Structures are given as C-alpha cells and as structure tokens.
Image (tube, rainbow, N blue to C red; front, top):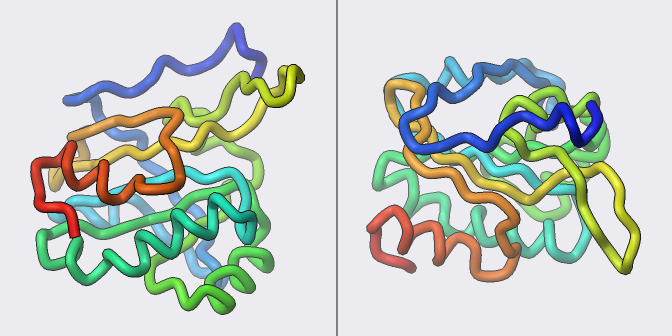
Length: 163
C-alpha cells in the first residue's frame, strides 16, 4: 500500500475492523472472540526491541488491573509467530501477541504508513493503540504513541486511575 492509499485513522465511534491472526502459539485469535468485553489493541513495530519490550512489559505488569476493569489486551506486530513465541516466553508476557506479517490488519487500523527516522522516509508500523468497546466500536484511538509511560497515559485518557 502506498502512502497515497493510506487508510484514514480510526475515530471514536467507528466500527473496529474485524481480524483473525495467529498468536505466539500458532492459534487463531479473532477480535470477535472479545465481543462483549473491552479490548486494548496495540500495534508495535518489532518484538524484542527496547521500546517494544518496555511497552509489552508495561502491559504485562498492568494486565490484572486492566482486566479487573473489564479490559483485555492484544499486541499486534508484523513479526513471525516464532519471533512472538520467543518474545512472549522471554518476557513472560501474559496476553496474546498476534502476527500480522503482511500488515493487512495494521493497514486496516491505519497503523501502517509513512515514517521518518534519521532523515529517511519509509513505510512501516506506526505505534498505535485502539480501544474497542463491548460492541466492537472504537472507544479511543491513539497514533504515534510513546512506548515509555504509554499504559499510564492510556489509563488517564480512559478516565481510569493510573497504577
């Protein structure tokens, strides 16, 4: 997909695009599996990199608190299932990591597009978080989020106490 074809960013109230992807164990996971619950769907560029590890561990450490408030967490990256399996095991991650190798889901969520880094422009994954409500609609959409402190900011933006 070229940048001229980039999907419009999701907004509050939009229907969240459905998806089915393989998790770190090679099992299919669908957004529809979470209907009736709130789901935090976060997109990250690459497993086992410093920022992505910090963000994943932040979600890991906050998971019980988020679950107690009715939120499930799903992490999506363009990594292969085997890399996700190693990442999940190494970091003791306690939520599904999903493989979006062709970045079709990231594109549907507008989390794939033009990036600039050290003066170079390229297509890649834009660190993004979409909160999906119980009916499958967007409750909150955040793009170009920072890995560090993201969960605390997300909690503030959702109006739930940061932990």
